[in-house]
Image 1: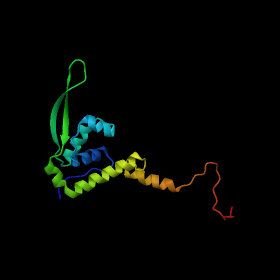
Image 2: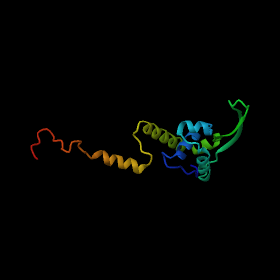
Image 3: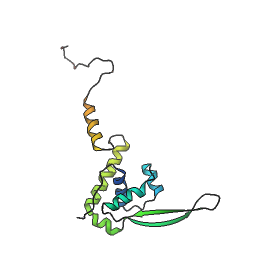
Image 4: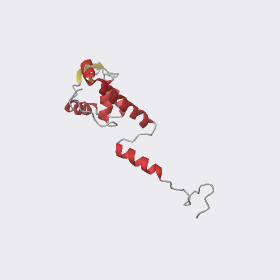
Length: 142
């Protein structure tokens, strides 16, 4: 097992890590399309502080701009060796993140564990709309 530190599942940092562990080559535009944030470089930096050796390649691409402008951007990825070292633990972690994303997209996962516990607790409370309580069939009390 490696000395890599794993971020909290559900954080944008975890979503970045899961994609890198899945051998994706990521750009800011790609990540923004999946997470609605342009802060990919910040999450990559946080992962590098936690011991993850994220590879970076600078690229230049022509834009659709009529002035024939070129855009500079960075592609982030893991080497195959990093993915191998992360091993089964890394793959299981990535799977948990993707399952969290799936539940989140259906509105069934909280953004943090405390919210998840609160929503379970609140779901147990029954608050009637008209101020009366619903009685079970056969209940004559009240």
